[in-house]
Image (cartoon, rainbow, N blue to C red; front, side, top):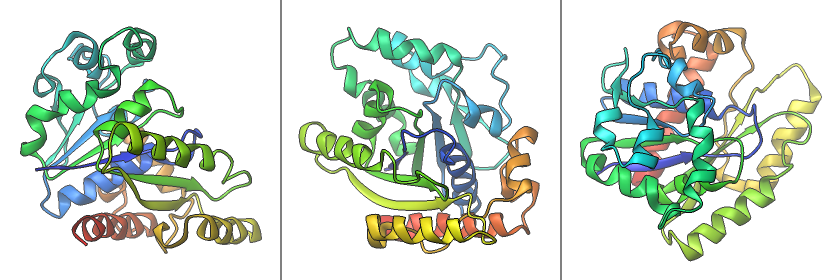
Length: 255
């Protein structure tokens, strides 16, 4: 039975997609069966894992809106053991269209049910908002991991995100918890990064993974080649950190 993890933060550009791609790849490298679900209409997890959004294949939109069995939308990636459910910009309309549907908050959870036994981990890349798509991810998830960018205004909106998670936990998904947080885009050369990291740790405590993800060109380049950092530059510092994060995801899930 898969553990379902939502990678969420309503702020854009904080590393949600990068986290999903690379944690998923390293989990697969550890022998786990992994499904990445691209819930962001930008579809960056899709392209970052080497899947062509223009291929005409089924996407998450058809799963959520037309009832297509999710297994028919699953695509294999170049990483053995890692599959993805792709997204395109068409998914942007789902928030409006879902609003009128019965059980709209549970569509993703119900869609995942038939395949949940096939995987050890399902990672959901949430869009940069607290709308209905993100709520679907939170309802489907066992736990949330929050990437936090090490820049000014890092904590802006985090309180609202935690309130949303708590609301979903109380009303729709009692098992939901914030399992971890990841400091991303860390530049050790600046005092600001250290100050932000300390502030985030004060705010989120022991849930913050102790090793930040460094800001590196190689990590930024990897998605343009459709590869996780484990394939693009496996000896880089960023690769090492995401390898450790994947190990920590497993450890916290079994603690």
